[in-house]
Image (cartoon, rainbow, N blue to C red; front, top):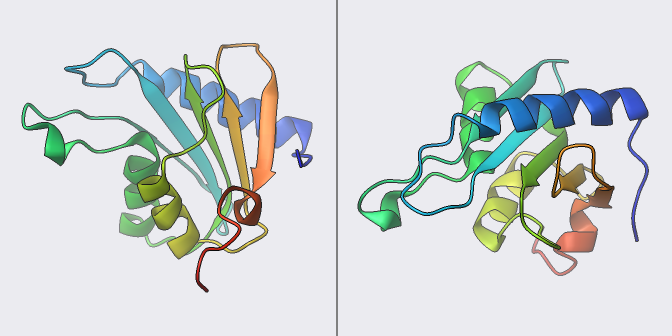
Length: 132
């Protein structure tokens, strides 16, 4: 079920995610950007950073979450992920990170092109059987 995200939040998080996406460091070809709204009202953003030893890649969502935690933030209220891919959501590993610092009601938005359709889900819709 697609959920509602306030238009102002959606637009701002989308803009920040597309902006930071351009800073991605790649060995492959898929740039990803993520922005999150934290419980302290701050926005944290991150892009994917690929390592030449690919098992060390840092996903955009994790990069944004690291900014949240290293700045003293605690909880994700909303997170928005952008990439030029059809029908994507955060991977299972990124969902583990998102769920560690959020709850079942946290909104996860995705967009596959600038100005394109927004798809927004609650975390428990993307990971319905996640152990809590």
